Amino acid sequence: MGLVLAFVGLVALGAAIAVVLRNRRAPGTATHKVPRDPFAPDGETGGDPRTLKAGDMVEYLGERLFVRGSLRLTEGGFTWSEHFVDPMDDGPDAAPGHRWISVEEDPDLEVTLWTEYRGEQELLPSQKTLTVDGVTYHRSEHGTATYRAEGTTGLGDTGRVEYADFEAPGGRGLAFERFLGAAGRGNWEVSLGERVPRGTLVIYPGGDA
Image (tube, rainbow, N blue to C red; front, side, top):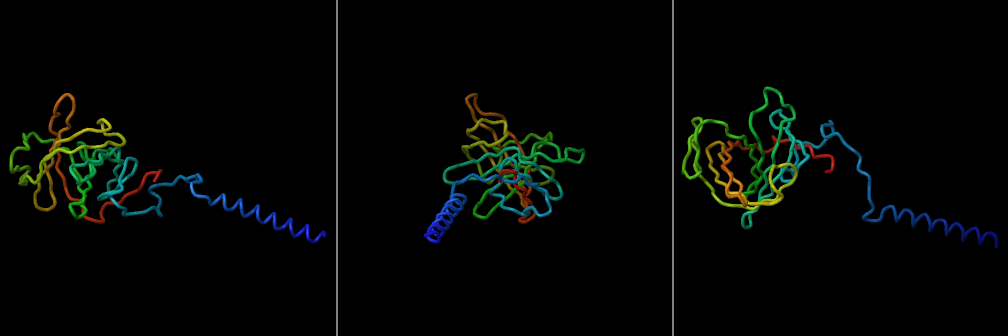
């Protein structure tokens, strides 16, 4: 009788352990994320630009940029993203003006780094061609899109933006944007862009990735 009771006790103990282990593996159980250094040697390099978001860091041509905020834009059935970036090193060699990275598939993946145009030449998006610093750009697109903002952008959570895009050989671009609101149409913001070759942008996901 004693052996029978001992055997029953062992079976009950085994069943209890199995329940505990199963509960530990139950889906939906909260897990603690270990903080990680985004610049650690074993960190992921390359990455998918389509996943960029506020809090990420990117490296391009030796410069590190911090993603401050993003716009998710939609026009008809077409979607794309714009990510506002600040340099990690705000020294004298940092490029002047606001910068942002656009990511779109049209149909191939296109990533472009844009820098605010700070020249004195007056540029108007109504023209079919524009020449800036010896480069001639041809107007390629014009439209109005809706956007949803994330992170720090200086804009409302949602809104509308009018844009006009110009292209030049060598992956160069010239972009006009003005944001539309209850007060009317804002001023045109002008930026010059350069296509980012595939595989040259290194992405370091933020700590909550």
